[in-house]
Length: 163
Image (tube, rainbow, N blue to C red; front, side, top):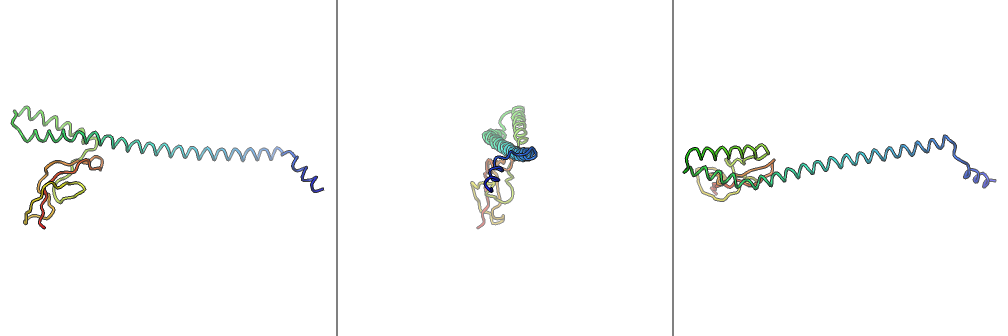
């Protein structure tokens, strides 16, 4: 008799209430799965946007780094003021416009005064002055630049050594 009851239960068709419960359960699982997929996609989208922004910053930094020798050449032209005033003023205006554009993009000059900082400065020359502080920058030989916090080129300097 027990086998007959077991056979009846196996062949027994689910009631409409049981079907509705099964359908509701399956629906809830699908909704949950969809929500997880949406969250994963949103995280993926945010991550790729962040990576894209970082790549753009580095790409701009590379272009700006290639323009730094141009700024250096302008600076050299200012030192040799053998040309007429109009020519020099025109060159200064071009330099100013170029520098303003680069500065607006995030370029900053590294301060080459005060104490030597190996993360920002490169000591090309040293001199010994007992009356001055050790590691004091004596002269800037070439400007250094940062772009959005990243050093593009160290400032090349002359440093005092007293030890």
